[in-house]
Amino acid sequence: MIEPHINEAELRKKIVELFDYRLFPQLLEASHVDEALQSIFIEHLIQLQTNIYFLDAHLEANWQTNPQILNLHWDNIKNSLDPFHIPTDQYTAYLNHIKKYEKHELELRQGKSPLRFDMEYFYFYKSCDVKLLRRLIYERFQLTPVCGMLSDWRFYDLVTEVNDDIEDLFEDLDFINGNRFLISLLYYDKMKSKKIYSDFLDDILAKAKNKYLSCTGLYKEVIYSVTLQRISETKELLDQRIEEIQNEQLQASRLFKYQNILQK
Image 1 (cartoon, helix red, strand yellow):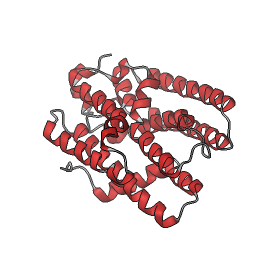
Image 2: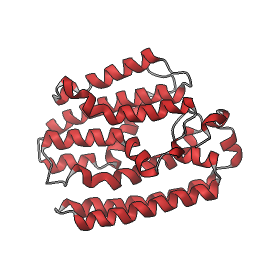
Image 3: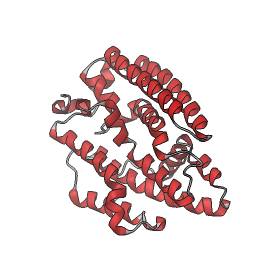
Image 4: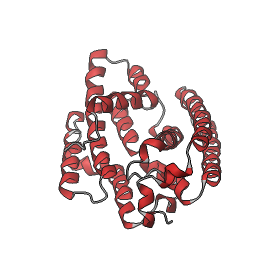
């Protein structure tokens, strides 16, 4: 079942843009495999990401979720792993971070706010889909150590996931979404939320630098430089959103109606 607010053509465009933003095409180019094979592989990734988004769309559209529909989406996600030749007894291990993300989203209905989590912990799990897809790319094309270790992408994934929350602020006003930035604005205020996120970006910057100094390989330059770029872009976007968002818009948001989740 696809939620009514989902436009499949727009969703595909969004997924392609996501892949570009997370540098998946560059990783595939580094594999030096045939372009036709790359295209087939990308289509498999798009289908997997699409099914993950369908799960997310049900969560964000419905305060009362339907277990049968959630199970259907999970079946589709698992079926999307078939082209990657993953043994079925390993599906749970590959998808456990996505299951954790779903748990965080469902806990909104129990009055459990994302604000109770350490920010690095929260955004680590919120980038679950990206980490899964990158893992599949690395494994299929044996990119370690040519493109670094999967763990080398940790801080890039954190800052880009923060960017997604800030970027999607206005879109998420109409949904039940664990957008931590939106919930921070509702719980605190604009200035405190700005400081919290600015400080977190500074923390990511410091940790990314330490990671860069400690890891080896030619690709570390690529990962570090693009992480710095994303941090700079996200700080600018943070300033922009804080300036743009109005208290009236926050109070008209769908999440504001559920006051019980606006607690730590």
